[in-house]
View (tube, rainbow, N blue to C red):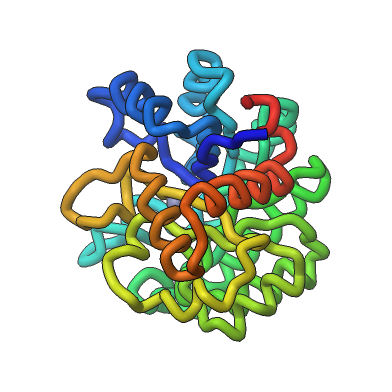
Length: 272
Ligand SMILES: [Zn+2]
């Protein structure tokens, strides 16, 4: 069985793709991507990602999630603020209403970057929103698509405590020892084109068994050049990088990572 690429974490409903979305989708298909796992960051994106799935049912695999960072920080911080429990209010009923169409809950997680979560209250709020969504995923029997910036160990520990058995740690940047804890828990780790920018994560990637690695783009973010919009058609870049690091062919890495992806997201397999 030949496998196309699975982009396990992509923001295809982001505003950055509004102008030329159909061209982006066309390039995605031409690049050999057979499944696009589409994560969301806030409730306003939920209807958009479902509409996109209606237009491209063979490609789009939707996830609903409330990101640990939300737009609109306070004065002096116009960028991101930590999520608050009330950011979940409008989202919760929609998880249940559309459960049959979702392949995972995400993007959820923790971001303890100091300027994004400066206070203990911020971190507590993130934790409570994360745990609540892990609980929803458990109730709906769905895997989770997880962000863990500056919080790799606590993210993994929280999921283990909550009994989460199926998780993707996207753009993982923790220590190799922490990555191996995730592997032991049965979790998967995915890497975007940005890993090709430097050798920073080469050692980490070499240590993780290929059977626990997935590919992602995190488009429109995390491309090779941070000033250029990333697209799902760039998925071959982390594939080639991982293949080179592990001394394997890119075809082998594509096939194994796609098998991993469909094992983790079984409901996405219908897209093939
Ligand atoms: Zn993301």
